[in-house]
Length: 280
Image 1 (cartoon, rainbow, N blue to C red):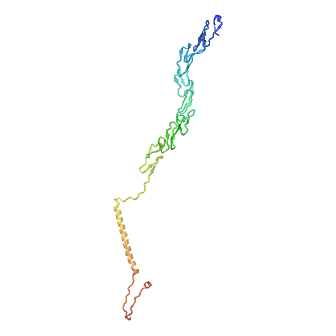
Image 2: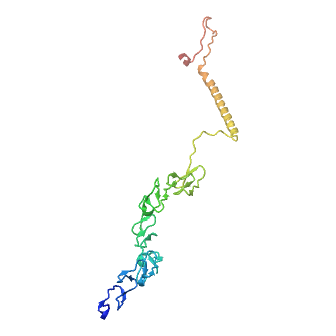
Image 3: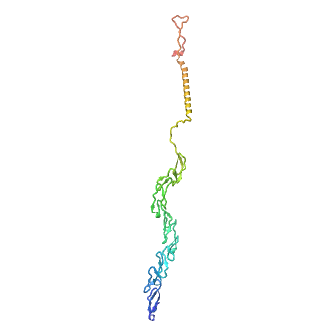
């Protein structure tokens, strides 16, 4: 109990004081306090006896009015709160441990995860759903013809045999595979499958037989002459055989008559005629 005045009969009306003058009752405020009764704390940014010292805290940190100690906000540390928490730490005095996966960063204030593009979830462990990409998976994929996009960058991954920014073109004739960077190694008169890279033979169109060349024209001529000679010989033989055997059936015997002995002059003799001729 603080007393002052004649016979120490009065009570000091002081709050946060170091002492009360035992004669006058004047309040001598403790460091960090001010006012006639020492019941007012130092204004923001000041501290110490009579609040005469200026705070040196950074990052809008509050300093204790009694001794000037900096009360750092979550995520900062150091005598004047000049340092951020080290990687993987957060919170007041950097006591919290981050739990973010896939290179996600956590808030220095409360440890909430900031996911890398293509990831989502409280701890960044889930990929973007199919058809979406980017930060918080807010972008929609625009790949065509079965292509899928990277959840991180949105770049299209084309199916085999397709290429282009949005997978809208076939691989060129000289390339195959997913990104068309593999070169076809097919011989002439073949085509390259743009998906597998296999070589397929090209069937030439049907054409008329080629004319004989100078190298074998002589042989062809000789063959034709021989063939004509054989035909002529066979024709001659056929004519001869027809003449030989065909003339016998049409021959008619000649009829002669001569005077015979013992016959009158008015009679004549008829030679014997074969039965076959008579039948005719």
